[in-house]
Length: 464
Image 1: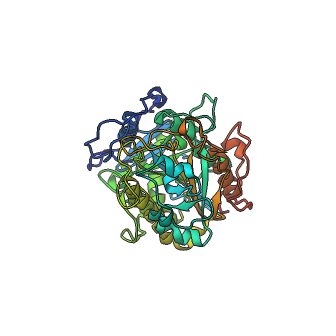
Image 2 (image 1 turned 60 degrees about the vertical axis):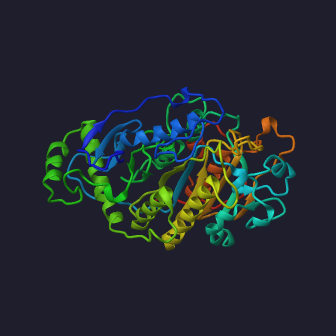
Image 3 (image 1 turned 30 degrees about the vertical axis):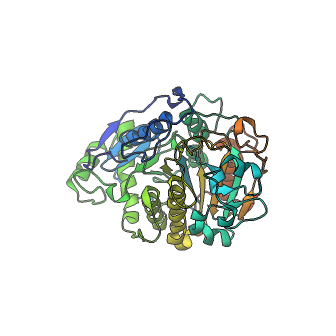
């Protein structure tokens, strides 16, 4: 996990972060433009704080015993690293789930347009996407034209859009909604994320099985299973030396200091060093960074592709992209904030699957966002916090098309898109189809309903 500054830092322990992000509830109103380099567009105060907080988390981690190793961070929760010399422990994964979080509350109505619903066009006189511009339109929906890089996935039946998805109860706080979304275990006193629970479901974890790229370790990967995080793959190295080089004096010194004994800190250091050894093959993989990868999400997905092509055992990945908090100046179908964000996302996801080659046969990508936007645009030609949005699922096991029960917008409560599909139903269907893990363990207390966008055949968690 990288510092906001370019210099490498020495290996050291990082204390757990126990701050409660749900404490802040900012008003749902436009705010002054942000002039910093984190969020290039204006948004509500809480939305910018969320983005800023995640940038600050590049210097911290959530839970466990955390070890910083140059440009990487490994959060170790016990039991993963035995005493003794550090040796490679890669184990190929048979299926991979990549979660792309659209931070700031993405407007699903702009991405997957309900063109047959007159209330959409009535509510958005300046920001609606014209029917004539839509891609892959059927009788009800069509894709934003900036999603054209995803058309190969759509045409091959490997892209699904599930509309009117979200939390079962509306929550307009960025912090609280994202925390609830990523924890996915309402009422639990334990702060753990659903993706961390999935990684731990088989009880036999590879060293580098869970990976967070680019934004620290989010809540959905917080928990008892070991997680690795880095901002840039090529900067994941031992500060002052190369952890992959067995002759490195620094590495030999760390092995001598921490290679024996049963302390939790020692186990964390051994796990960190082993993780970097396992990561070395990925750092040797080159990728086509200029073949469609765009912006920050493109850089992150390019690194993810390198890791997955190295086949070192990674089975769960998180990537963040934002901000999508468009209270002011969404723009039009021709130019502006929304088209820029959709272009970056679609170009990068399309490039990612093309880059993966045959490895794409085991990779499923899903997008999540904390909530959607209201149907009516506001006086600043933006949209305010709403409820339901859209989830995109692409790749292995997907049966392409539009899914979900459309509620209609004419009589929507509080000008929201009503949620008709619990977001956990979407995630649980992916987990069930691709991993065969117990959805009761991953999403405790939730009885999920199949939507039908995934093939029903399960998959083993790891190759033998």
